[in-house]
Image (cartoon, rainbow, N blue to C red; front, side, top):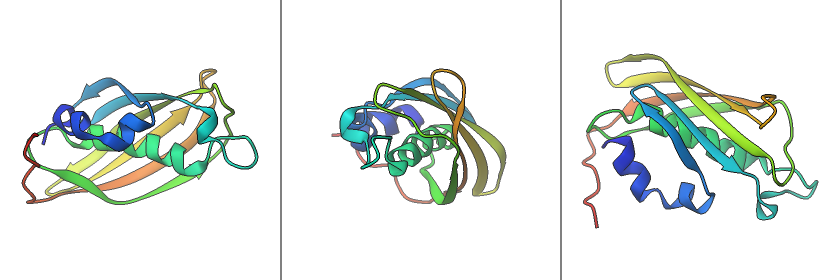
Length: 134
Protein backbone atom coordinates (compact mmCIF):
# COMPACT_ATOMS: atom_id res chain seq x y z
CA UNK A 1 0.00 0.00 0.00
CA UNK A 2 1.41 3.39 -0.86
CA UNK A 3 2.11 5.74 2.01
CA UNK A 4 -0.37 8.29 0.63
CA UNK A 5 -3.18 5.73 0.67
CA UNK A 6 -2.11 4.55 4.12
CA UNK A 7 -2.11 8.10 5.52
CA UNK A 8 -5.56 8.83 4.07
CA UNK A 9 -6.82 5.96 6.25
CA UNK A 10 -4.64 6.68 9.33
CA UNK A 11 -7.15 7.93 11.87
CA UNK A 12 -4.65 7.79 14.75
CA UNK A 13 -2.15 10.15 13.09
CA UNK A 14 -4.98 12.43 11.96
CA UNK A 15 -6.30 12.68 15.53
CA UNK A 16 -2.84 13.84 16.64
CA UNK A 17 -2.73 16.47 13.90
CA UNK A 18 0.28 14.88 12.21
CA UNK A 19 1.04 16.40 8.80
CA UNK A 20 3.16 14.73 6.12
CA UNK A 21 5.65 17.29 4.74
CA UNK A 22 7.82 14.98 2.61
CA UNK A 23 7.00 11.53 1.27
CA UNK A 24 9.72 9.83 -0.76
CA UNK A 25 10.83 6.21 -1.06
CA UNK A 26 12.78 5.50 2.11
CA UNK A 27 12.51 9.06 3.39
CA UNK A 28 9.76 11.01 5.13
CA UNK A 29 9.26 14.18 7.15
CA UNK A 30 6.19 14.66 9.36
CA UNK A 31 5.21 17.40 11.81
CA UNK A 32 2.98 17.77 14.86
CA UNK A 33 2.20 20.66 17.21
CA UNK A 34 2.08 19.70 20.90
CA UNK A 35 -1.39 20.41 22.32
CA UNK A 36 -2.46 20.72 25.96
CA UNK A 37 -4.23 17.34 25.76
CA UNK A 38 -0.89 15.72 24.82
CA UNK A 39 0.84 16.68 28.09
CA UNK A 40 1.65 14.31 30.91
CA UNK A 41 1.51 15.10 34.63
CA UNK A 42 4.73 17.15 34.38
CA UNK A 43 3.28 19.47 31.69
CA UNK A 44 5.53 18.06 28.96
CA UNK A 45 4.56 15.93 25.99
CA UNK A 46 3.76 12.32 26.84
CA UNK A 47 6.55 10.07 25.55
CA UNK A 48 4.07 7.79 23.84
CA UNK A 49 3.02 10.65 21.60
CA UNK A 50 6.61 11.44 20.63
CA UNK A 51 6.89 7.74 19.77
CA UNK A 52 3.66 7.95 17.73
CA UNK A 53 5.07 10.89 15.72
CA UNK A 54 8.32 9.02 15.01
CA UNK A 55 6.39 5.84 14.19
CA UNK A 56 4.29 7.73 11.64
CA UNK A 57 7.42 9.05 9.90
CA UNK A 58 8.80 5.50 9.93
CA UNK A 59 5.56 4.13 8.42
CA UNK A 60 5.53 6.73 5.64
CA UNK A 61 9.19 6.07 4.78
CA UNK A 62 8.84 2.29 4.62
CA UNK A 63 5.55 2.11 2.68
CA UNK A 64 6.99 3.04 -0.67
CA UNK A 65 5.16 0.61 -2.94
CA UNK A 66 1.95 -1.44 -3.08
CA UNK A 67 3.11 -3.97 -0.45
CA UNK A 68 1.87 -3.52 3.12
CA UNK A 69 4.90 -2.86 5.33
CA UNK A 70 4.57 -2.69 9.12
CA UNK A 71 6.84 -2.23 12.10
CA UNK A 72 8.47 -5.39 13.44
CA UNK A 73 10.10 -3.59 16.37
CA UNK A 74 11.28 -0.17 17.41
CA UNK A 75 13.04 1.62 20.22
CA UNK A 76 13.33 5.25 21.17
CA UNK A 77 15.67 7.40 23.23
CA UNK A 78 14.14 10.56 24.71
CA UNK A 79 16.66 13.40 24.87
CA UNK A 80 14.64 16.56 25.55
CA UNK A 81 11.13 17.36 26.73
CA UNK A 82 8.68 19.57 24.86
CA UNK A 83 5.91 21.81 26.26
CA UNK A 84 2.51 22.69 24.79
CA UNK A 85 2.92 24.77 21.65
CA UNK A 86 6.19 23.13 20.59
CA UNK A 87 6.32 22.05 16.96
CA UNK A 88 7.96 18.65 16.56
CA UNK A 89 9.32 17.39 13.26
CA UNK A 90 10.27 13.75 12.66
CA UNK A 91 12.58 12.83 9.79
CA UNK A 92 12.82 9.16 8.83
CA UNK A 93 15.63 7.72 6.74
CA UNK A 94 15.98 4.19 5.40
CA UNK A 95 19.34 2.67 6.30
CA UNK A 96 18.78 -0.63 4.50
CA UNK A 97 15.97 -2.63 2.92
CA UNK A 98 16.75 -6.20 1.97
CA UNK A 99 14.18 -8.81 1.12
CA UNK A 100 11.16 -8.29 3.33
CA UNK A 101 12.96 -6.39 6.12
CA UNK A 102 14.20 -2.86 6.55
CA UNK A 103 16.00 -0.68 9.07
CA UNK A 104 15.13 3.01 9.55
CA UNK A 105 16.35 5.85 11.78
CA UNK A 106 14.05 8.69 12.78
CA UNK A 107 15.17 11.95 14.40
CA UNK A 108 12.60 14.09 16.20
CA UNK A 109 13.50 17.75 16.66
CA UNK A 110 11.69 20.78 18.05
CA UNK A 111 11.23 24.12 16.29
CA UNK A 112 14.68 25.28 17.48
CA UNK A 113 16.35 22.24 15.88
CA UNK A 114 17.14 20.62 19.25
CA UNK A 115 16.86 16.85 19.23
CA UNK A 116 13.90 15.61 21.26
CA UNK A 117 14.26 11.88 20.49
CA UNK A 118 16.04 9.32 18.34
CA UNK A 119 14.04 6.30 17.12
CA UNK A 120 15.14 3.14 15.30
CA UNK A 121 12.54 1.02 13.59
CA UNK A 122 12.71 -2.37 11.94
CA UNK A 123 10.12 -3.11 9.25
CA UNK A 124 8.71 -6.23 7.67
CA UNK A 125 6.85 -6.32 4.38
CA UNK A 126 3.83 -8.56 4.75
CA UNK A 127 1.80 -10.57 2.31
CA UNK A 128 -1.30 -8.93 3.78
CA UNK A 129 -3.62 -7.33 1.22
CA UNK A 130 -4.13 -3.61 1.55
CA UNK A 131 -7.50 -2.66 3.06
CA UNK A 132 -10.21 -1.87 0.56
CA UNK A 133 -10.88 1.86 0.39
CA UNK A 134 -14.21 2.82 1.87
